[in-house]
Image (tube, rainbow, N blue to C red; front, side):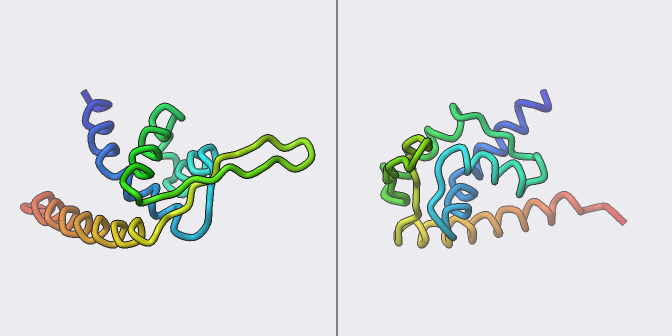
Amino acid sequence: MNEKYERQMKKGVLDMLVLKLLEGEMKYGYQLIQEMKEKSGGVFLLKEGTLYPVLYRLEDEGFIESRWQEPEGKQVARKYYCITESGSMALKEISGIWNQISSGIWQIMKEGQA
């Protein structure tokens, strides 16, 4: 049962986290997967099948854009994603909502604790 709740909770914040990771610079999919793992201390271990639908949805909503980068030498072509202006605005809004929700959750969860 633990996995079920963990999956549901993580799913609700993926859009926000992807937008946050793209805030500083363009990144490709595997890079996002690795950064999410490293920066979360291993809490977010995404598979490509989880990340790419998020990226496609964010792109459909106009929050991110993608660009193919031509390979140099022995590199392979990579699709890079970058946040758009409307994505930056959405990130601020989502972050504010997240802060309200997490604050409310914390208030309930700490009730009765010493």
